[in-house]
Length: 144
Image (cartoon, rainbow, N blue to C red):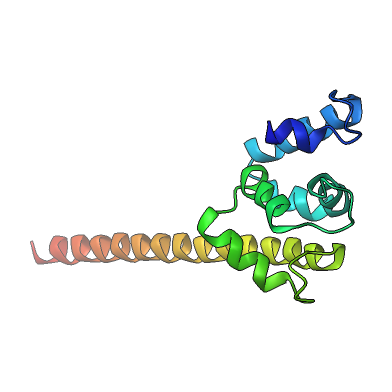
């Protein structure tokens, strides 16, 4: 029911085309592991989506939906909320939410860079091992 409630923007008990389109975009972003980029690029629409009560802020209970929609770990969620609630009013306004999306993108890019570095180091080690083997084989051939 959470997904339906999030997408029933006008509270009529129906999901219109705009709501359906948003759902499809979210699902496609999730399937291609681009949730955080989607959330950043469409931060205002996502903020409005999470602002279920229309108060122009996102409460902790509303913020829980980011876990479901954007693959945020439950254990991290309350701490993330506290970290980005700069005003301390236990609500995220749009600027605070936008900072959260920027953080998510930065964190994802850092993870991608770290993964690339590990893969490059592994590839370099494999090349070095292959070169050592070739040199050893050549040395062995010279001996015999």
